[in-house]
Image (cartoon, rainbow over all chains, first blue to last red; front, side, top):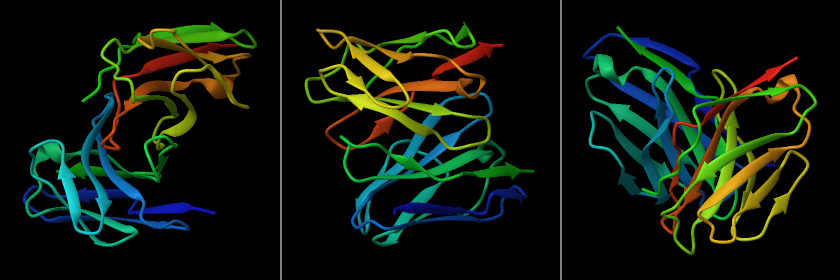
Length: 112
Length: 109
């Protein structure tokens, strides 16, 4: 069966520090991969999505970047975190838009 | 990005049916309609999806208007575990899933 792993579950980082969140998927090949951010009490904002290795599309200009070094690995990064980067970050995968997307358990990031 | 409009909140009594509406007047002919729900501090969970015809699964039913500009998620008997934020989203030809602000469902015992 397919599973998605996302870590860490919680993270507290100082302003100006770097960030690296990792997401891996098991049990499927060539998935579409997604990074979302959810601010407190708000809906999910699509940040990045990828349809293949090295193919990243950015939805919102921001302080973050994403990379896909392997087929089932998706990384969200920042060189210098801002207070506004705090939020709940979710990784997701799908095979095709006509099927469902599966979400990880999320990382709650607090920038202090 | 494709847009959907949902009421911010709804209430239902336990064991009664719930109809959660969604408007998507700008939907294109190839967009699929998906519904997800999210419990606090968890990732969204898939509920149901469809294109043109009404759909049923073990969790819910999806009724899609004939012109596809609106849809309704139907929970046949609400339980306390159904209390969550429900998102209606459209998936585009580019494989993106765009979420709106959703409907917060409260189930009253």
